[in-house]
Length: 237
Image 1 (tube, rainbow, N blue to C red):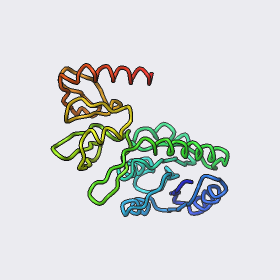
Image 2: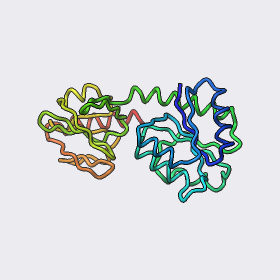
Image 3: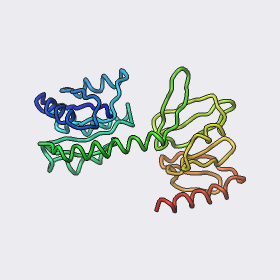
Image 4: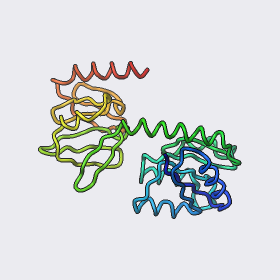
């Protein structure tokens, strides 16, 4: 079952959403916030929610779309379902800022559509649970979604996992990390492996990733990498 936050500046609507969510079979707990700042402060302190129902028109200095991008930087795995009473004003803006967007609801919220979104989101989360790398870094156990990883680098006795916003260091061999990864990863050098979903193009000596990072590809791996990449991409088309 899901851990949910509702963020809306109107307490009446928060209570209404909490009642609707309690009537479903998908929600374990619901926390209500009348201030998005309080929600972000709790997230920075370590509170985690699987879904946030976020009002767009918060009557604050920024709208919910801007705040969702900030939340994404704190917890990229948290799903965002926007809620608004102004569909015409925001429907074309929700994709302009980065967030883990999972839905869009208009007020008054339809119970039937709410249940469909919860069901789909729960299915997506279960699928993503099988698509993450679990590592121990220092005293912390960290879950990294495959979709967040750009490339992996071996340096001596440690491996550095490069994501869009962070680097994670773990004391393992590259082959041990590769054994726990999915089919989207390919080794391109004795010290490097890349996420094929992040490849922009392959050149003779480097792989260019979507963020323009260049990763070395050795001559010994070039042919196999190209074959793996084209085979992988053809299955996605």
